Amino acid sequence: MHKLSHIFRLGIKELISLRYDSVLLLFMLYAFSAAIYMPASGSSVGVHNASVAIVDEDDSRLSRQLAEVLRPPEFQTPVLLPYGQIDEVMDSGRYTFVINVPVGFQADLLAGKQPELQMNVDATAMSQAFMGAGYMGRIFQRELQQLSGVSIEQPIQLNTRALFNSNMQSGWFLAIIQIINNVTILAILLTGTALLREREHGTLEHLLVLPLTAFEIMLAKVWTSLLVVVFCTWLSLELIVKKALGVPLAGSMLLYLLVTGLYLFASTSLAVFLTTLARSIPQFGLLAIPVVMPMLLLSGGTTPLDSMPVWLQTVMQLSPTTHFVSLSTAILFRDAGFALVWPEMLALAGIGLVFFLIALMRFRRSLTA
Image (cartoon, rainbow, N blue to C red; front, top):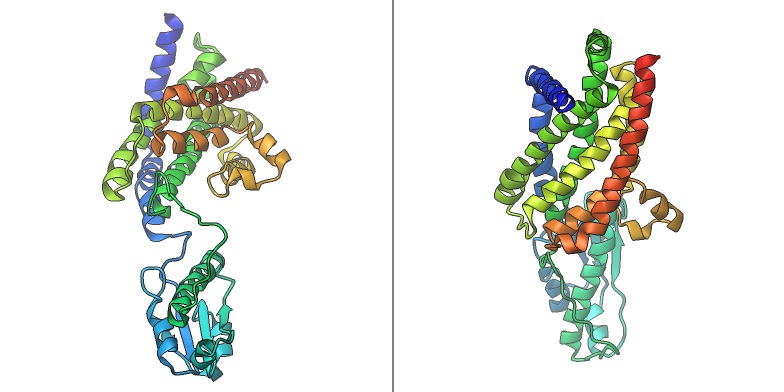
């Protein structure tokens, strides 16, 4: 009971210290509000509002019809462009797509020939260029088949069904990924800066003369960070993701917050381990960057895990962020219950326990050094 009382009182001290840290409080407010809303509502990984210009050398009904079928929100209204300005506008990046309809295009098509249509693509706008060229090719093919009256039967008919996000809105996924990224950064920042601040101010030495153990000091740091970040995550999901962005979250909020707690247990333990390697807050920040960035970029949230080399997929299974990304999408979007996600939750808890024990050993050595 004495140990629990010590851990609780130390945690209250951490919460009081956080209350008076206005810079960190402002950063938390930003991280769980504007930092989630702006990327999710303002950025898109698909084709949206792509700029198009058309060089209409044919000046036929068909060429004008091809311009009319490119409509918002995928494409901007096409702009007519003289032939001599193609190189200039492509070099300046003014348009992502420049379509050149040659002279006699409609006449050749109606005569049964196979006329060529030139599509110039600015591939520096990578996602727009890759997917937009495919969209545009399918749109033009459909229109040309209807005009020529030639029906090309495909050997296979594909019926595509988009589950859990029927309109394929990238903002839904980006909002959750932003929360995961901010949870990771805040968990490490809160724990690491709190511990190093006490070391720099000398209050850690004051704690050591009290009847306290390294286990109690470390666990107090962990549970306070867990409490604060889980509460902020819940508020962000309810107010920003569900209300402001209108993302329908199908899964159990309680189960997701439990998973978030397991992830925070692992990430805060990692933060304590990093503080044992650093002697100041600037050193801790420099040390955290090469650790946190690969965890976020290679977790499967930025790029699919399956697209990575097999050896890297195996290595990333040791990262708690990989399991947290998988569990987040499964619970919040696919409404996966405990019966489906418990193996990955067990893996996340196991990784957290290993991190905690390693960090505890290093923390004890650093206190006696």
